[in-house]
Length: 505
Image (tube, rainbow, N blue to C red; front, side, top):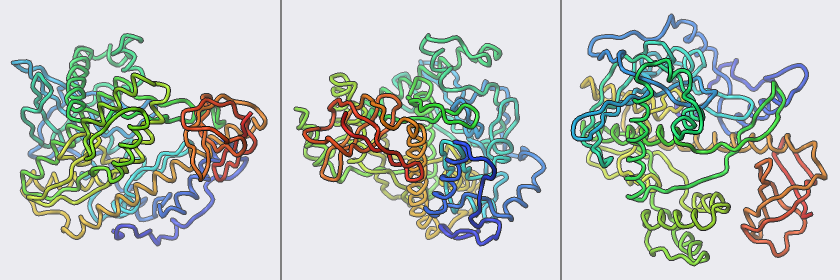
């Protein structure tokens, strides 16, 4: 395996043209993404050795001894409409006294992707899948991540199960982890499930075809709402950002569509937060180290206090998540049209999450925004390398085996995974900007309604209401402040660099 951050020297992995023939919107953006990956120290292509390993797999991993058979449960996956790399399944069970058991099954990726293999080496280099508008650069080959190690519908698969019992108020009563064989009864999508749960749409076909699944999902939803309420009571932050998804008609970019949180995404988020917390607690109980996902107390808290004061609100001098959440709740109610921009400002001031090694008897700093103390990443091993590391630690702890990594290796991986995640985020942002510039490139001279999202010495920025994209206001910036509504004219785009420039109309 290549050391963390070391690119493969395999000749097949050298930069090369990805697309040939007539350029399309999709191929243009994919080529930009491919080059951006290289520039940010990521490997867009799989090395030849990894391809050889992949070709040797005859099928998914088979069940062995000490693996429970839970295939009779009403397991289902809920993910994005176009997701094919299915990492988790969930199912619920009512217990006495108002308690509910929630089971989260996580794909056993380690059963095929062995530590020290060429596939593992590529995953350790990139540490994450990179999602761009026109192309996905998966951490693992799609033959694995969307098939052999994916919890696909109507297929038997190995998994690590996080088995949690919650009290009626949403607090955790108990949890255990074990290996199991599972069977996905229904591949579901966020938008259609959310519409059904909120009564604005019919039940998805797969729910109707699986007897009992409808009530099981409604039970899951009720538990998730309790968990959400309890976390927000303890200071979990309700932040909202404007994220636009590129929509293609064939290979032509047709529009940018807002990607919004809904009832189904909240359901999965709550269960993943709970499963990740239970995993961290389990490893600590076994005296194992773990890669924690942490978000420390904001170093720029003073600026958050100033931001609140500008809005006639008061926050305490020391970081206080409960007080900040109260402020956010009030601002959402008072000015919902400006809340996404306030959220973005708070997110920038809080800072980014990172990976940190937690040693036995250590004191991990916890996650400020999620309001959880013990938290790791474990629920997406097809997409994130820290989750695969955590899975190997878990399997060693379950089997009473020695640590699969040394403490120096885990320390190095914590920093490397943080760095590569930042690099992947930069690639995704760059290509998203290029997609927006491409969509607007034929509209030079047209006027749009916009809101000012940034106003400082370094420049003034505006976001269009439709299409939902941001650019720089180059002319007519005088007197503008964040939150002002303004009419702008598009004067320039640069697709390669992702630049969009406006003038005040």
